[in-house]
Image (cartoon, rainbow, N blue to C red; front, side, top):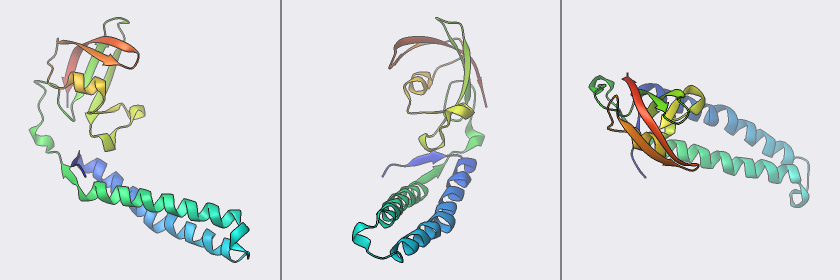
Length: 156
């Protein structure tokens, strides 16, 4: 298992999700299995099969979250600076072809959420931006081809 770097906020969200799965979802599925079992013949009981499958998927998800929690290391946000692009920085970039500007916060894979503008550091764009300075132009290969971006601003 690899080490997961995250913020305290991301860790709290992860623990909250794990708690919800263990205290709410797990009992719900156990109840569904019990209700399906009470309906009789298990060999031809689609409800029972579906509930058992859902239980297996839930337990797998709980196991994955527990592994992440066990291997989490916290990022010291006091060590952040804006000289170069690094994890937990907000980076404003300009697409040199379209002149469109975008801003992303570079975060760990487990905290990534594009709707919130949080880009995982292991994505091609984030990898290309890491270590760059304001004014740097970077060419990044993405699935649609080669894109050129200028680093406009780095903030915390």
